[in-house]
Image: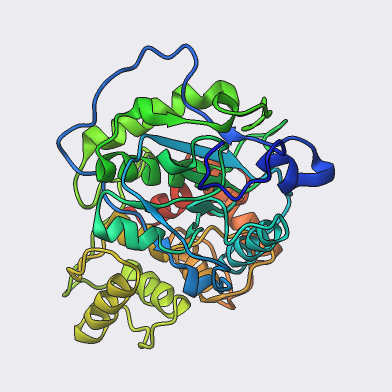
Length: 368
């Protein structure tokens, strides 16, 4: 076992974390794979990563050391509930819960480096992870895979994949995050492994494990695509908006900016005020600050929404649905009428009819 690990000898990290839930796991991309491609020269875009300070992390309870020997990317599931919310508040909540669980284990901080919520939000887990990304080539030594913590980046995916799959929003965020990590640290996709490959655990769950080669291939495809603003794997490009644009997409943009804490009017015109708020949002989110709203910026702005949500993002959704022929009150409340309109739109566009508004539904609503 790593001497740098905070794990008690002989006790698995996953058993400590899940208690009565039993053994949990980690998302792994190994096994019988024969894919050996090295990372492409292009750099995959950096996704929006919510810092510890933003989601309300408590200070670390000890000194966090850094490692310069990344060799593995280990993706875990939390063995947590599959019925929690998918909005931003829910993402913050699970991150705080995980840190609390890990403090209870006697660890100095959250064990893993990143968390991916059911809504697809990516959060910094262990303090100093974003610092390592910004510095380049280093990362904080975590506590998530016995004997390999000084050589392994860890990703926790919210949920229990013993019998179900991750959400579509989680899948897309995992692909984007892992592609970025591979290019940032100079790793091939063969570096993507999971807890099951290192320790005795069921991680990442028997339902998800058979899809790991699919995930590895998706990461390779994302790396090969490269670019600052690659389109998501939705089959439908997101629009790109720039200063001077007007219309329903700009109205949706302005409402989403307001949802994300920016102060501006909603007039459907991409003028200097909107440009300034786009730039401010990009700066605060660690994105390329160019004032252009493309796939990465849209993806950071637009949360996954489900029935029961109430926010300005719902108002943006309702406005887009009205542009597609519905007659909803723009009241910021995702009630039965909005759910019905979402399902109708998904049905007419050959999408999965689940009433959940994630990146695929958003991108279709925003298309020309």
